[in-house]
Length: 130
View 1 (cartoon, helix red, strand yellow):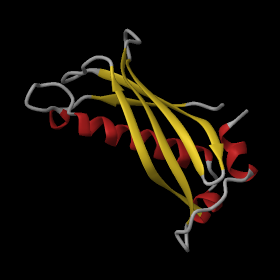
View 2 (cartoon, helix red, strand yellow; view 1 turned 180 degrees about the horizontal axis):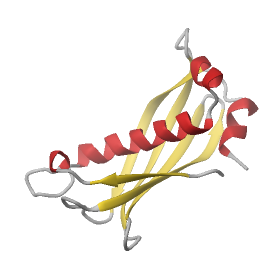
View 3 (cartoon, helix red, strand yellow; view 1 turned 135 degrees about the vertical axis):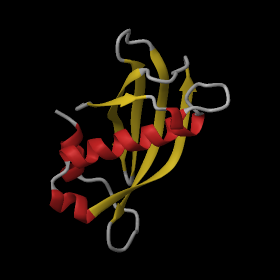
View 4 (tube, one colour; view 1 turned 180 degrees about the vertical axis):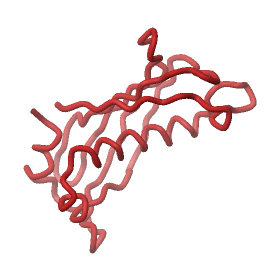
């Protein structure tokens, strides 16, 4: 499994009325780190051939992040089968390593032109595994 990390700094716009990161912002970060990982490892011609669509997000909130916190979002693909793939994300405090959230997201691979589900073949799975 090849993991990918993305640094995040909590900004004022990320906060809710309780002055900690809004739950919706975590969903955005989960998607952002997945997209950044795909864009880093997939060749341009592969990115032009396929796109990913979210089928399900599952997030466990372990602690809170506040304004100015330095976080690290780490992601990896747990498994792929048929047209589906499960990606995991952990967001931790950068300095302490304390987990803020853990997420599992189910994705579906689509043909970029037809937008129809596409079986995940070795040209894709080989990108995510050593």
